Image 1 (cartoon, one colour):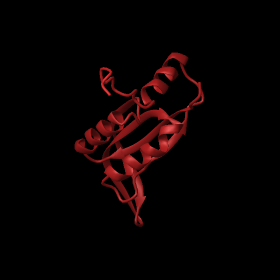
Image 2: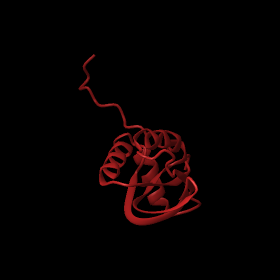
Image 3: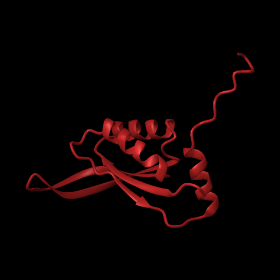
Image 4: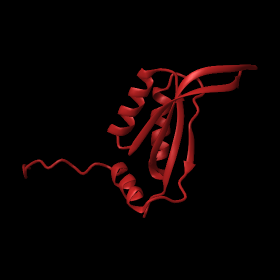
Length: 116
C-alpha cells in the first residue's frame, strides 16, 4: 500500500457542524468514513474547568489527505481552537485499508463521451 491510514478526531457542538464537516470531507474525498457519537467533554479553557456535550467525529482517511482535511475542519469549525488529532493506523484488515485508500484518492475525470 502506498498510503498510510490515519484516524482523525475532532469534536463539534452542533448537528449542523456534524453535517457540514461530514458532507465536505466526504464530497472532497478527504475521508472514506466518518463516525459521529455523542460525548461529554471535560477540559480546561481560559483557566476554568469546562463540561460540555459534544459530538466526537472519528474520521478515517490517509496520511496524504490529513493536511487538507485539517484545513477543511479549521475553516468550517466554530471553535477558536478545535481539537484536531491525527492518529496513525498501524494495522487492520487489508481489504478495509485498500478501500480506505481507494475512497480518498482523487476522483477519476468524468467521461465526456469523447467530445473535444
